[in-house]
View 1 (cartoon, each protein chain N blue to C red):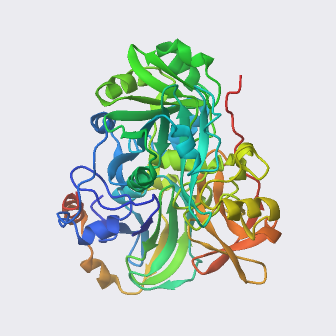
View 2: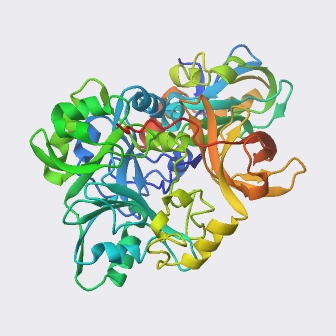
View 3: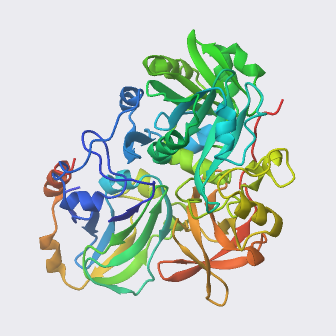
Amino acid sequence: MSDYKFTEDHEWIRMEDDEIGVCGITEYAQDQLGELVFIELPEIGLEISQGSETAVIESVKAAGELKAPVTGTIVEVNEALADEPETVNSDPQGDGWFVKIKLSDPSELDGLMDEDAYQEYIDGLD
Amino acid sequence: MIEQGLLPGAVRCPGGCDNVASAKDRSKHSKKTASFAVARDTPLSELHRELGARFVEFAGYAMPVHYGEGILKEHAQTRNAAGLFDVSHMGQLRLSGVGSADFLERLMPVDVVDLPANRQAYALLTSDAGGILDDLMVANAGDYLFLVVNASRKQRDIEYLRKHLAGGCDLEVLEDRALVAIQGPRAAQAMARLAPACARLRFMQAAEMEASGIACFVTRSGYTGEDGFEISVASEYAEELARALLADEAVAPAGLGARDTLRLEAGLCLYGQDMDEATTPVEAGLAWAISRSRRPGGARAGGYPGDRIIARQLKEGVSRRRVGIRPQGRAPVRDGVKLVDKRGREVGKITSGAFGATVGGPVAMGYVPAEISAPGTELDAVVRGKGLPVRVARLPFVEHRYYRG
């Protein structure tokens, strides 16, 4: 798990290689949201900037979004989430991944929290 | 990351409660909880904490929105077996004295005078403009009338009733009572183990009885469309009764989240969303609640606030009506969303919307012009700037299964 980076908005990113990062929402986020019922993923090829709305998330009790943790281009999306959004609840940091992004500025990763920092951050929220 | 909590009145609640709405907000204001009023407990709050409830603030109370299983499971549980809900936040009132029935009839288009003993009626308090001040249950408990009002309107209703109280009538606010609802196809079986007398009740009948030796006032009714009971019990025995019901393996606790999705599938209104003071009973599709005796030509026609307007609407119809709305895709369509016709003209709006776990997709209710209220009418719901196709649908989405004997 040490290669995960986290945002204040409870997204995670894990680099697959030097260029491509896999992204999703954290365990904490899925717990707060409750059972997900609808996810709308972006088109492949979409260019997104860090912090912009990238995916729509609807749970039983709330509406939310996945904000891009980094700037780049969407190169792959997790189609399975359209039929089974609940995968995000059961495995938010594994099978519940949302998108893969080709980073245009890898230095943005330096500004994100590592796992310990994120844990400390969410501990401070409760 | 989380934009919008969807339970009415969801705000921050310090001291062990979670804010449904906003993990994002909490990340910015994590320690600043001092300015919020502390939400009230119910007689079952300890039990909820023990059962792992997640809380939301609703009408000044800290209420379970769900327990460990989550809203979808609790919803399914209630349709397949039995769910136990704490609804102690609602107002329980006792109206007694000579002329109480007449007094109430002066405030609502409902037959209270001829409401038989041990029978309950769904009722509407109306305003001079013919709008709905609240919806409530009125039960004839023999030597008093037992009223259950919405938590969000409780204070207003009490002041309103007190203001108009006829001499000789007494209104007592039952502060020391809890209210629990057990709902679902196995509710009757679970309740009968503790209170055999409940088996004799049919839908909308009421009786005093003992459950596990605890005195209760029980009505066979609820807010889910399923068979079940609402049980008024002294606060000090509420936990004991709840635990006794939960001991039945068919019964599981269920929170306000499931309560909302269940009632929506059942086509039942939520005051403050699907109707308010600006909505008339006919617009809200609640003309059935207006008793025959109170309609024009009835034995005690009129004589309640807004009677002329409502009588006219009963005769001539209304320009807008509450309807079911079935989104054609998977995205939920929520309260406040605009409805447009296929030409893009705004025609109405959604007043309640959620994911219906029994239906297996999004369901909603809203208001549209009467001339386009036929089931099957195709409209668009404007969500995130896009038109999502929806259709007007018949209510309820899930058939009621009330026990009528």
